[in-house]
Length: 229
Image (cartoon, rainbow, N blue to C red):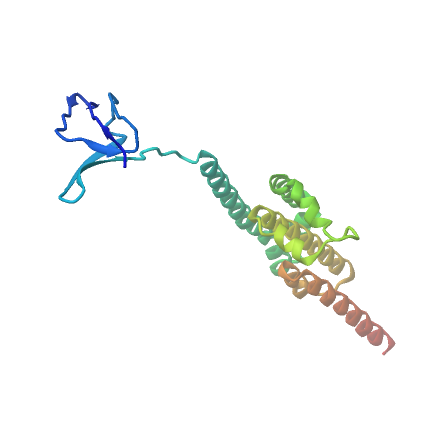
């Protein structure tokens, strides 16, 4: 079926002499150096097939996916930043709500509500997070429909990023605090109770605005009836 193959190769620094011949399909293996780290040599004997030698290459090549490591590292940093901003942003607005609810007539509360410093700090933080989370895909997700209007599914994909979610949370904190401040100042001007409405504004701003409108209307009605009597 084939021709004799003569083996006269050296492995490492030792010569191998084989007192037998191997039959193959016309290939002669001669003077080839086989590295021990790249190939393994094993022998086998059989009364039916005779001697045979099997050379098994060993694949020792390994590589590191540096790009993937960098992606995971950047994702970890982004996640940590989003979590930190979420926590500190929430803590930063709590003193304002505490003063408006528990000390509405205090001079410190009045001066604090006249200051725009909290909005400046939160606004800068929001702009920074928005810059980090903004990608070319963001515009496509916002204007996903054929009428260039947002869709619920696309907005859900956009907020799958923790940085985007953290920026949205800071956005809500700023808007809620602004509404609570307006309600507080309106209540001080018109002598209207605002503590319940300000409390709602912390997490349920539309409900806080609604309760303030109702409270204001009821207060005016009560005063009108009192003056009529």
